[in-house]
Image (cartoon, rainbow, N blue to C red; front, side, top):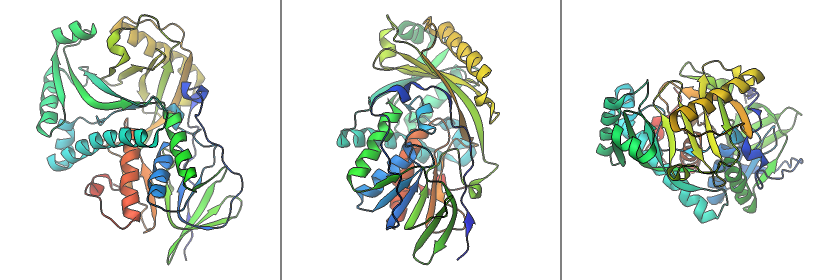
Length: 409
């Protein structure tokens, strides 16, 4: 038996105060006691990826231990703005050129299918997390103009994804926004991400899963019939399989030139009176670099973000948190005329991206029974849903028709 390092990358997963950590039912009580039972699976990470993974595995009747070195749902999950989009960061037309039409089309279709699947799951499990279906307005910008968006809308329609191309006059008439073109699509959603993750963990616990924190995994080894994970305290945990759902704090074995950690910023306003009616339903982002994105919540707050930087650690700079928030608010006002005043909440976080905009969902190199879900990109929650579907199938010995799209690269 050969021991391998399993200390994941360490980062300050968020700075400032996200709105979601101040909402009720946004975390779960964890045990501090590790029992040395054998489990069917150990899930490392108690954020949205780990929660979806634990729910899928317990739904299949498997015994599951969930561990995290932080309190549950207090890592990067609360830093999400929870625009649960089917739209992948890399447009379909560009992804076709990069990975081929078949792979690109399947990736986009799987993303749309998973948003629908997540909404259905939340409804079935009766998780109260403000989940609702929403259309998305994708605006022309300095990265893609009107002509490119028209071609993008046509490509999406070709594979069965609803996408209405809007011209300048339509955008001004319906949204009061002055842009040359836009795509209006229907297959996305929004939620409170902390309540969503906490609700999924509660469901897993109701099925006899165990949740223990704080636990830091430092080493791992594959056994003839399972895996052994060692903790920083020298304890050894044994299971049939292990799944690392540690997000941007990925395993050293997963380091690659095809993905990198960047920085992002976000804010939430106080409830705004007189918001345009369309903003209570529609989420917005733009084809620009850096891009602005925003939506409202049930209380009438405006939640906006963007101003991403390629630097991995600039999100921890308190001065940048102030200046980036002002920039986001100014861009929002310039685009929509909406003045939000002083934000009620401001936060920043590391944010990982891949060269093709797709997540990494695969076995860890060199292991048969150790898996990882790296839901990188702007579709983190959507990709986490796909990860839970693919990895739970692999553990059950079944193949997933799209698993090849998200392999380690």
